[in-house]
Length: 364
Ligand code: SF4
Image (cartoon, rainbow, N blue to C red):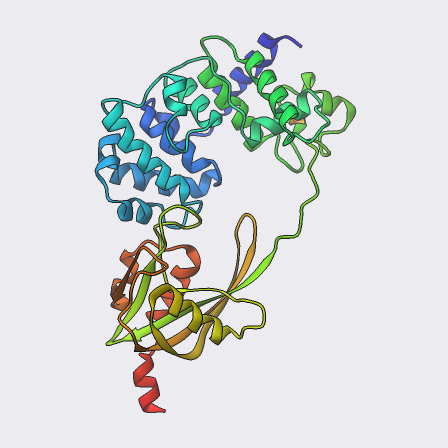
């Protein structure tokens, strides 16, 4: 197969079939960077409203750099993988201080910014600056494994290196931005993980997996390990008509987000004991644990949790930020303005319809 044959088929198909997506109407490196970061772990349809709101709220690198971390996390709320938002924000601040507010067109400078790996750098350089840099994301990996019949696990470092070399050898000089987008579009809409639509594929005649009837079995997938499971407690702690929120420490999972405080159950511990211990350790307070408000299940990338949220009454101790970044008593109608993970947001919505714990006790 010649490089030109592969790329010209893809480019012609893309010119005719490309979806009209908001970030494709822009050549602004900042807008393309935001879109690429959002798309890293999230489906296109879910990203579109977030992208539009984010760009309306922070239309330039300078606007993003000037925003508070809370405002950025709030704009990201619901997209998940919040390290992406924190890195984007930190990188915007560095672009303002170190690069005069211009997203750098230099691969080495881009690579030094937090959250910009080889894929994101390749996308920004090729799409915004029309440089001949390849990309390799999940979609491109799948297409290349099938077209070139790569029959080893593509997550092995040696296979990954080979795929990057393949990707680099295929880019058409001067057209790489469109070509990279075409390749990603093919993976997203035609060469899908299950039931690829080979009869309408523009590179079907060049595809080795299709020729052998192996398109459904490639790429090779390593068997999935069962995710560990944890029981986690959270306290909806009432005091004078407000509830207590704690802000998670920056960095790490959900860093910077606000939550109903609590933590992971230890072996041999009841859920109520767990919650009392966690609140003592995290905030230095004593509470009376009341009724279960709700239980919900959630899966993160590397583990699953069942979250048990209890209504509690604050008994003693001025809260202190012992195991969190900050704390605040918040009226229920102000909860919507705090950035939270999806599990805490569900608790917050329930809190809005909850009877104040002390009143409940007095009525009982
Ligand atoms: S022919 Fe089928 S398997 Fe091959 S690239 Fe096209 S859609 Fe994917």
